[in-house]
Amino acid sequence: MYKKAAARLFFAFLLMALMGTSVHFSRAQDGGDGLSPQEQEALREIVAAYDRTRNWNTYSAQSGENSQLALSLAVGDADPYTLNDNTRRDVDSVYDVPNSAVQSQLGQTRTIRENEGRQTINNVTVQADFDIVGINGIVYVQGDRKANPDDGQNIELEDYTPVNAPLASDLASAEVANLQSHVDAKELIALRATDELLETATKVEDLGQVKLRQYPNAVQVYAITVDPLVGIDVLNIDVESIIANPRLDILDQAVFFDRLATDSSLTITVFLDAENGGLVGEQLALGVDIQLDETAGLNVARGTQASFTLALSFESSVLYFAINEDVTINDPSTTQ
Image (cartoon, rainbow, N blue to C red; front, side, top):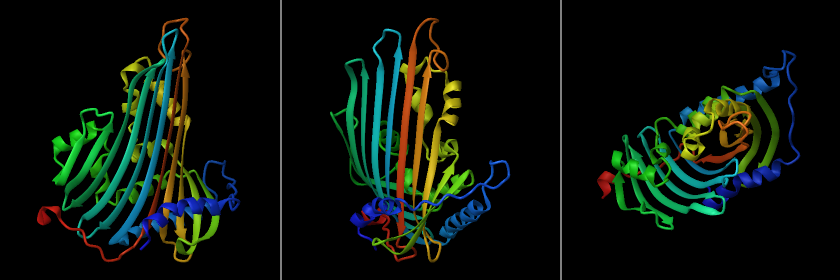
């Protein structure tokens, strides 16, 4: 089994190793909209690797997510409004699929800053550390959430506690990740989500093979361009709650979502074992860059200048290992 430090560095070393190894497939002579035969063959290999994960009875996954949101709104002579919302999340999980059990360790840091001109409206950093167990359809959590400065929503659970509706609501209000989303053993959420995204592939790029000291076999790497709107839905990125901010009430949502479709991109980089085609890991990179003004997208009085910008980036990486090895996940209801 990999040590955590080695797993954390896995993708950093991989990206360094990939520099200069890109191989571009040529497009088929079919109008340019479809995948070339080489791309189709590569995509079949990738899909097959995800299909074989259905034979994983047990496995471990170490993942990291980093999301950064920056938006600004300026209308006439009023002080401009800005919001920055950055979240870093690390999750280490062990899955026992036949027994519908999963155990995760989640660490999350979220920083939210809001300003109107030079006035600070909100400036808070939230740190959450939880142990999570999902077993037989019940989710248990243990850990704490702390904010600096204290915002009155701190949570401390010394013992494993079943997640009921009130607790789930408290966790959501306290800016904590949806803990249930990390512990669905039956659906293998991350794997099935990526599988769904691959169905929307519009480009497949062969990034070649590399050898890494963190993995015994050579690793074959592909970068796949997929539909960003499907990705936003599958990744549970709640764009609607972002633009529901009362300070953005002049935003024309129809125009905004049109721009979201055209001014976003999503790439999945998939890492396969070059010898047996097994899935080793994946990276997802979503980028959104939207700009609106008084001529399109902002409902303001005639003659009023206005501008709105939204930049969103979401990056995640997952390393899968310890496939079909023995695991033990204890039921908190029988051990307390």
